[in-house]
Length: 595
Image (tube, rainbow, N blue to C red; front, side, top):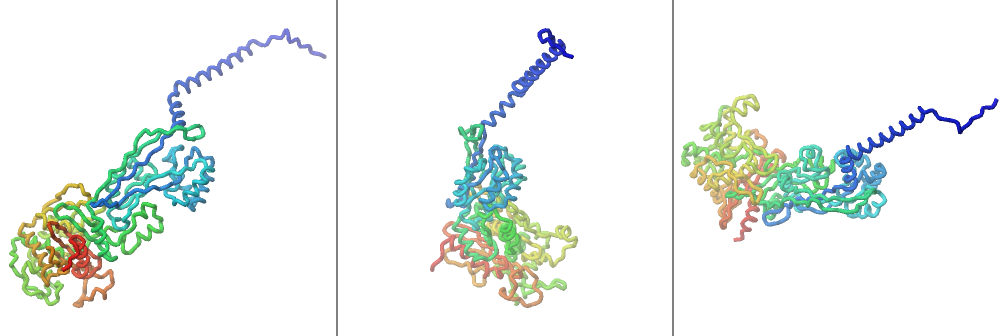
């Protein structure tokens, strides 16, 4: 059977033709709608995205402000540092590229990968993600010759903080390091990879030192190659800072310590300007700016001599006999005559307790002036017993103790002026009379910082003003308060300090020089309680059991006036230990005396 098909007479179904036309029309409608959606409804957004793909923004890092001493010597500067960054958008194989960077720099690939994964959330795909922050020049030259074979890798130049004096000013300047997650979150002006102040003046003056970033607009082709670069915002360098410190005086004081632990302050008593602020031992803040390894950090942190501790403001010590300067002012304010005498036989008995004078045989009959010059403990025991802890606490706090001085450095301690209420809160116990006697000679619970002592001694010279210790050369004098000491009281204490240096019986005679007027007060702060009569020599005692040695002093020559306060940890007797250190500082301030 054969079927004959006649194509000329065939007519397709009309319904099929309509369906085909409808389908074509529907597709055309979809194209029109999609075109409208892309070109009109979201046209502005896609135009901006296309523009962003063609134009990239590149930050220009501003130089951090310089820090100089009062003579213009550089204390903190900037030097070029070369880093290696990855632009994700241009990188074909990120794992292989990280492995190559690891091979070049001997950095574990796991560490690089972890940094990449952590930082990619904060860096746009076309922005450099910093992998290595500071490369030595020989490594830079090697990478520069091979980097052409690794698309996406880029060598970038940043400024790096450098401290020419190293440990000499480390506790004052502090250091900078890369901003952490919390700092980036709290400060919107920071970007990933920025370095910020972490300690010292670098932290306190961060906003003044940081400066303001600039910006380039870069036109690129589809392969990411730069076609044009345009400066759209000029960077502004940070403010340059001049300190009141003198590097020469600082160095002389540092050398005088000869490696001993302690701190020293040199202060202008009329303006509050600090000329030296030494803490020994110290650390190299350049190591922190370069990126301290975990091993080195642990070594510094666990060092038994605590080189990270700023002993001038963060360490608190019993003031020992230096406290008697303040005690004398209080005794005079209570109307007790300077000529009234106390008999010192070497000890005071209070109940079952015996409170001894440093001089075993006693000083005999002692008035106020002699009590200071020869530092008689019994005189202050008896006066404190008469006046009581409440008056002592009130007067000491009015003289600036027990509160921070306001110095522009972080983490300043307040020290401690003990009281009945404090002991009740701290130990849940009542105050005992014997504790008042201990406080009267700067022992017991009493704690001060060296900078507090410097502020107080300065107040004896400047009319009673408690000045803010200032590190900035252009900062005006700031008066934080006034001591309650009378003019007569200040003059008497100053004269007693002068005689403590000028007379052979004085405990600060080591400072004596005929071409200048100097006053001093030594202090020996007991670290461990001595049981029994026998006192060992310093060299016979374990280092950590030796007394702290104080020397609080002032000096005048040719119209120049200074206050110098030194505290030597476990130095032994104040006059023989701290005295020579202070003497060498005055040799720098006034010139070495040659008869």
